[in-house]
Image 1 (cartoon, rainbow, N blue to C red):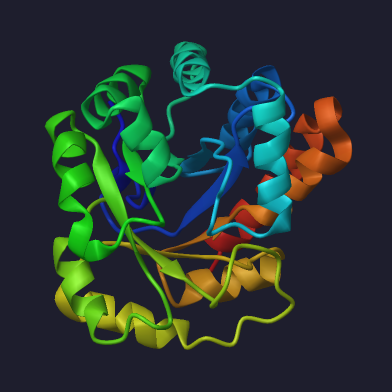
Image 2: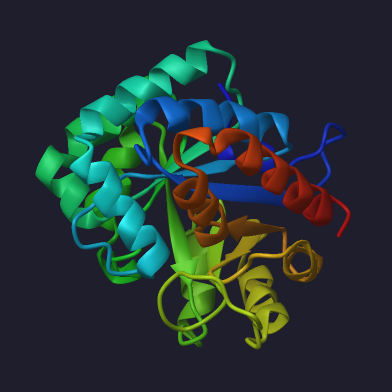
Length: 264
């Protein structure tokens, strides 16, 4: 089975730059999500973040909030997402997958049950942006028991905590490029290189940058000073614009972004 580490590892074993697209499961339907996952793999995605919809996604801006509402209104459940992932794995999806959701979703489902079913479906990790580093054991330990990694986040306000987070991080470190919620930004002014250096002083774990990236130029700049770029809102906006017919547009966009990251 694939691992998160594989996303950042070239065939010869050296470190490579990874492009990590995000999509909200069930927007506009789980069938669309399934086809989009296969399209993103074809287009060069190295790892894919799967958003499990939640009614109060506090880290998300309007674009992903609205995607959550559309998906939940369509009747998407955590169990139906697990089933979709297992199905698409059977269709040849081999890239690592990471769920991005909130503590309430996992806790409400039952943490041990969530971990077991996510692993069975073929997921490699989980991102929970509302779980503080100091309280992560409640989730990381049950996930680890099923072979899943809890991905840690660092932000421009993390400062002296960055090294502590990096020392215990699993999979990769998600570097939040900007203060505030997710969403496309015209400029990213945070000292990303400085944040990445703090991680590398404490650990050899890969660092990927997300929040606000939307153009190949931005993705290349972020990947040049880190180990990869994460893009969510720009992809979710394409899904919202084209609905059931979004897959070829998503594939085209992901290909342009992946090429930019891989050439950084």
